[in-house]
Amino acid sequence: MEFKAKVLYDFIGEAENELSVREGDIVTVTNTEVGEGWWFGLTSDGKEGIFPTAYVEKADDSELMPPPPPSIVTSNVASYTAPDPGWSTLGTPVQNTTDSAVRKTSVSSFNDDWNSTDEESVSTTVQQPYSVQAVQQSTNQVITTEISRPPLQKSDSIRSTGDKGDKKGGFKLFGKSSSFDNFLCGAIESSATTVAEAVDIIDVTGFLYWKPSTSQYTCTIGVPKKGAKFGGLKAYMTYPVTPSFNNIQVSRRYKHFDWLHARLTAKYGATIAIPPLPEKQWMLPKVDANGVGITGRFEEELIENRRIELQSFADRICRHPVLSQSAVWRHFITETNEKQWTAGKRKAESDNLIGTDFLTTLQAPEEDRNEEIITEFKTTLGKVENAVKILYAASLEQENRYRTTNKKDMVSLGHAFSLLGSSLNSRVPPLEKIGDSFCNVAEVMETHASKAWDPIVHLLHDYKGLAASWTEILNAYFSCRDRQKELEATAGDKERFIARSRINLYRIGVMCEINHFLQEVETDLNHASQVLIYEQMTHYKDMADKMESLYANCWGGGAVQQQQPQQQPTAVIQAKTINLDPWGNDGIYEEMP
Image 1: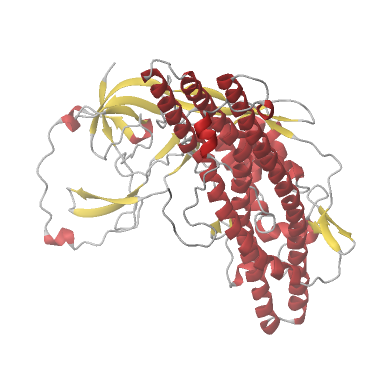
Image 2 (image 1 turned 180 degrees about the horizontal axis):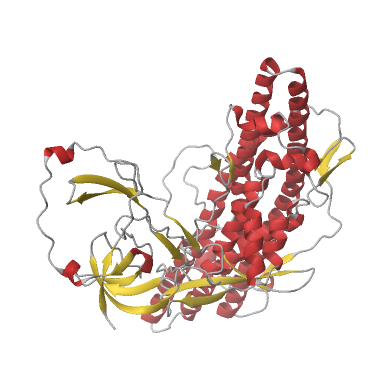
């Protein structure tokens, strides 16, 4: 049954099927069974789509009438100073009506594959208040009332880490201020750390490392499955995640990986480099047989590339001695119960040991450490970050060239040879064979791009993200160190002693992560380089084999090295003895006979 509804708040649609509406608009609701807090309808100008039910209310007949002309506000009303919202001029509470009350709305997670028991379903006082002036006819008083907009929780906005100060990348963004004082002055006590939260550090011949886990495992990101909501109006992908220690599969969407990344960054990001996620809308160019580009949100190649980079993200966490044992990661890869999943997410979001406070969980050697290693690493990181960006751009260009330019060139050459051969009525059979061979080689170009260049492109994508994470870590460390130096000049003896101990603890944590990172770099780059060169060798050998086969097919005989060119006319053979160098041996130009 159709009915009219009045729009209470502006809504800007982000997806193609979402209808943008403005406050005060009248929309015709045609379907209320879309599900999870959404209706389908159309505006007066004929545009249609889905919109959140919390942003509209059923319109009364009076609201469907044309609006009256604006009332004239007298000067004494205009100069009236409104009292606090919800209170009369006598200080007694005013009974709120539906027009002046602060609205509370339950908005379900419209883009989730769990129901409204998920923590993304919120019932809250709205976060974006704006003032509405209501003129009370009986007293001519203007009362300003705060009215709140229902929060529309989007799938990629779950990055709240609590009121912990300014954040960047999910953890505190510290500067040269008192932001570090709680950590440096011992407000967060190490004794509060439980055995389960303790992070052990070992000294191996003078080098500090995170203590390796005794329970190492892997985690597989399987082939994603496409799902749909709202009767097919919204599509999404779910990725099966299977840890090796129990082989029980859980399904997660990209938004859940995004939430996990935000939690890991919030807790560990001041000390540990968190691997990056794939770009949400990243697309890899692809061409058809005619060289025409093909793109699409759920295009097969995009999905597979995202799965590969999610697998790399999972691999790096599983290899990390600290991240692999973290409660939030374990919860992410194992929890199958819906209520337990929600409870675990809320627990992770209320964790107090985040940022530099996480450092209080470190069980480290007592001796002081020199920060020279960190200073040298910071210098090296700047060079590495720049080199990674350059190599990433060059590798991506090669990858795209093989998929587009080189492939298209081979197809064009193949068609040109075939066209020439057919125009001669096949009097020169090798021409058409060459044309067919070049067209076949075009497919080899795309295969080579996948095998040789894709791995290193994915790897460099990871290191671009890791380098950015390292920049945040080093900035935080040196800012904390600067704050510790300030305390040396202003604090008492006890505070200075604690601050020295704490900055040394931070230094040890960063050194452990540097050593882990350098181990990863050595392994990753050696392997990726080996794969690249091996695939290059294989590719060019395959190309040579194809040309050798083509040669034998066109001019007969066995292997090329045994095949002699056909006998040429005597005149041509004799012409080879003529001096074709017009400059001669003395460097003086002479006309040829």
